[in-house]
Image (cartoon, rainbow, N blue to C red):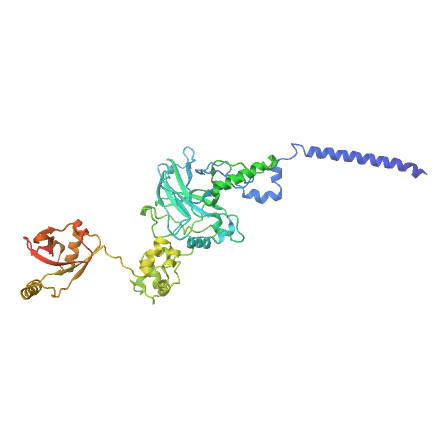
Length: 507
């Protein structure tokens, strides 16, 4: 019975203790979740954030960079917070990038009054495509012969000096500029993002690209090799007007979202500021051939093939055949030419930029290529030039005339025919020589006649053409340009007043 009396008391005590503990735990939770209970530094100190924290540029967050590049195009509103901005561009449209000098007073004084060099590149943003970038760009070159991926709109640009675009580097352009002066460069991107998407069902999303700018200053040898600053931004390129439609679609989608959902996305900025990034990796290969548009004093800058990414090392160019090693240089490509001789022929005829594409081609392989084949491989301009060189086509002269030197024997034959027939006969045998004129000038005609008859051009005093009633008309450039093609003339010589000098008469 004693136990029966104590049980209710025990239950009451236990229940009371549980209530007090539960209340205390609730009050503790409330205090722990208060405003001063946690700090972001405590959260970031957790192990799961250690790896991400190491990749953040903690020291450089407040660092003022020497230069700033601004792409004057609005960013997409459909980009989440803490993600990189995305900017839409139209294919072939000119977009301004402002090159701003961000230096503090007294910072980098060695740049005062000096030029710097900036290299623009359009590369893949997707790491998967970076590994196959060389093959991707070669395929694009094949489908779009003669086109470039990146160009500078020079008439619209301001402050750029000596812009150049190497024909073998479709995605790279570069120029010099003065940081102390206003500089704006207008770029054009000619490829679109869907050209590098696997075609499956249609409507595939285009791949993003990156616009990267690397800036260098001169070293002691006048070479632009000392890195100053690099920055890049993410872009997508659409067919003309496509970027405007995509921007409008993203804006309309964001307007339909709730205020809570909108807070997860960053606003659309009027311009795109390129963010600092690692410089483009140095490549050991240096092209010895000067690029178009730069004088020789700026050709020492070491750049690579241009059609590569940080993970792609370009293939070395095909070696130039050493003539001194025993190989005789060939003037015309023959079907029996070896691949090595074909490479030599390509270099000698200024096709070195395409030597790697024809590394294993023999003379017979090259000669079998059709006109369409070489245009697809090399583009319209170089393709036509290569096809003509392979077929050995000569340039047709602008004017061809035939001349015969009058001699005593010819005069006697003419006199004999005149005596027998009562008039000048036409049965006399004349040997004519062809003279081909390219410039169609009196000086060129003088030189060709002198060369034909093995005399000095200085011995020819004047050249006349026999006109009506036997008058002598002085040959001029205008008269030669009005000669009929394949006209025939008999050359008569008349001794000039000075010794060893002659007047030439065209009859």
